[in-house]
Image: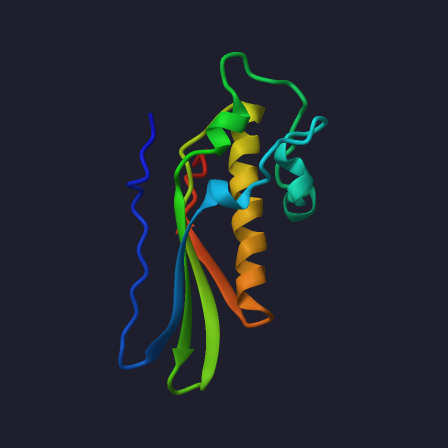
Length: 141
């Protein structure tokens, strides 16, 4: 079983940056409350964000409930910083992705999380520059 104690942290030099805002969110809270009957959470614009990157098939993995797995307690930190010298604000999202490799169902969970955190980052940034960082646990092969 997974816990919500995933290693996620944002640090910055205080002589260069001022903290304007910080939010910690459970990624599962960013997902729809019910999956779409046709394509699970893919209604979240995963196809737009990841088109061409990963092919998701409709094959379901036996004994792996992607809806339940997508509800993991992984958290993301969204931090808005002001750069003292450039006089500009920007937003950082830092995330520790679940470690799910292999099947299309597992890739769909990763894609659900990725789509949700990117959409939320853009919503929070409100047009400001933004950066998404983290440990995305991509299979190194």
